[in-house]
Amino acid sequence: MYIIFVLILLAVAMCGPVIFYYRGKPSRRRGKRALVVNLVSFITIFLLSTVFLFARPVMAAPANAVSDLALAAAFIGAGLVTGLCSIGTGIAVSSAAAAAIGAISENENNFGKAMIFVAMAEGIAIYGLLISFMILGRV
Image (cartoon, rainbow, N blue to C red; front, side, top):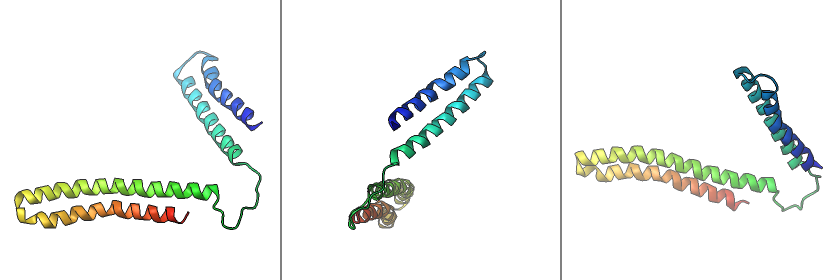
């Protein structure tokens, strides 16, 4: 029942803006209105299908069971932690390594000091992995 309702809404959302645009003389103003109709229908279908997707009867879960939503949130959180920390590491290493190469080219005795800063930037990714393992360990 829900699938048929969502498919009907999807058909209306796909055909509605086209019919709205070609109903009269095509113009730039009609194109903008058709775009607004398309966006409004898309957002409406997205919200309704999300409600229908998650609308299920509520039943009691066992005391030690982890819900599907909590499991999904844990995986999303672990992925975000790892990904964002890796992006931050890339940005930090690019700046630190460029400065380290410049410092080493001027004075070779600065190698140890320069590598410490590059290694500190690499630590961000290791901390992100550690936190993601801690999140996944609790699930």
